Image (cartoon, rainbow, N blue to C red; front, side, top):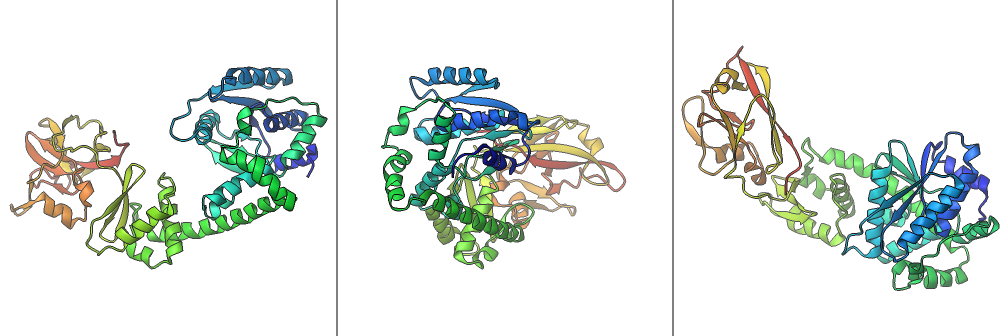
Length: 443
């Protein structure tokens, strides 16, 4: 398909009417075509506020020269230019690390409702699908590069995706454009470049429409992935409880492939990376199928997936022991405890919670379990705190995070689970109820 401005405009408007639109401008052929095509559409799109952003990864000796060249082109086109300099983390590979750093910078840049246009085209789609196929990806991976997707407060759009690289080059030459050439793109030791320069030319020699057919297959996979995601969301909602844990028995009632997809959706919704198939197989074998009273766990992304009482939990990795921590608390305001990932408040109530008058008589202190604590009941008998926590179904890894309130050296309350009979507000009296919420756990 040749690149015609009318067709390009149609692709752009399929995402909606653009307002602030940032062009990811590297200076290469593809992004140069994208920028110049949008410049030509400025008068036809009255709401269009066109801007360019260049990311300098500092990975090449000429990176600063390329940045200056891009700024000069934008000045000539009267397009506002923004430079972003990023640091590529080691250990993730130059291509993957650069992409991660680049999109993190883009996400921070985008304002609410703003668009970022990238110059991905049909050949990029083919390369991406083939790379993912070689890695054994599932249907979501074979969906390839989406035409648009959310990014932070804005949206990434790819209006060149239906066009092949050859069509972009032909348009650029016809328009008399100049662009930068990155010599790294010729290095066939990189997987994508090997596909681009050696594998795909052979495929095109045998199947001239290969890029179009791969793009069509990616579209089919995207449709299938959306249908599956809707079904998984419905099933996940039926398996979760109010605390975000999953019913293990209900999970095991699902066929194995569906069970794996539900688990991936559950983990993804909680910010985890997609675990490999072997990790899910181990979870299924060692945790889900363990005896009902087993308390087992597997690590994932700095957190733990726990089994407890037929529920599957995702929790933060254990922090240092809180047993020696003692904190003074002014009950007029909240208390944040980063070491425990907790925020405590005392909210006024009537006839419930801790007697407010008693709290005001002495300094309040918060500590955590040390072992051996005993709680007094209304009839004057004492029982172990450990027993109460077991009866209430508090998971073992949460028991050390239950805040214990002391006033004048006397144990007043154990979180929201227990209040000393001597400190409890009576009917009609002003009380203070303990409210706990989670915050980010400090390292």
